[in-house]
Image 1 (cartoon, rainbow, N blue to C red):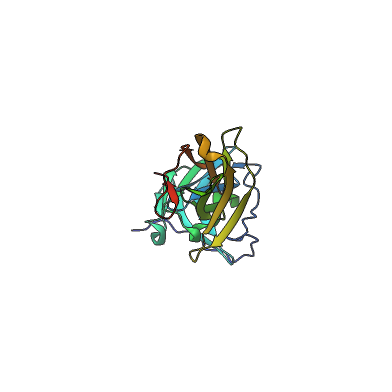
Image 2: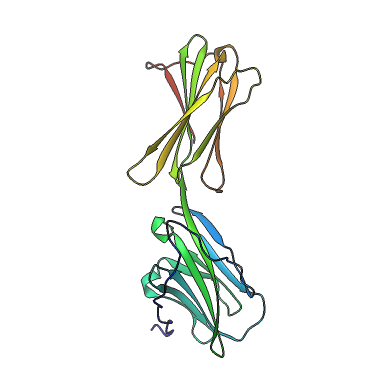
Length: 248
């Protein structure tokens, strides 16, 4: 039996947007929380609110902020303990349930989970304290390096990465005496909302020496992914004249 009576959802005007995550500051005078949480698609996102002063809290609730209302996800009281809205029982859970500190997680985040979340401390008598944290979901696949000789004095190196939002792709030649004549970048929008970015560089005199090439990719401030390959002095070409290096 579901004992906790969730607070009624409120019809309010919010400036929050799942596309533009401009949320109120996560740190209020009495609540410590993070302004923004980032999580990779398919992974777990965590949210935490901590009261900086002890209060007579009777209930802590978590809500997702929608354009026209606040949808309750979970609640905690001393009497009934942890309660998750049945509609989210496979999606949301508590990592720390208490009346002064509260933490929840969202499993297997997707683009639909992006947006702002509200922690609400119901205080006796009648006062509420609340703070907002916004979730940004990103996607970043491993980079792929391609090496192709285009002539006796040139080798073309390219690196591709797919992500959401569009990833930043940086090619670096780790050899001082290899000339870097320039590079170009191409972006392709995919039907699933991701973007594939390819950065290409033409290297001279590469076939005379072993050369290390580094490809670094990232989205937003998420952890960077790298692929580093040593290109031998003589590159064995395939029938099409191209050798592919894939990350593992």
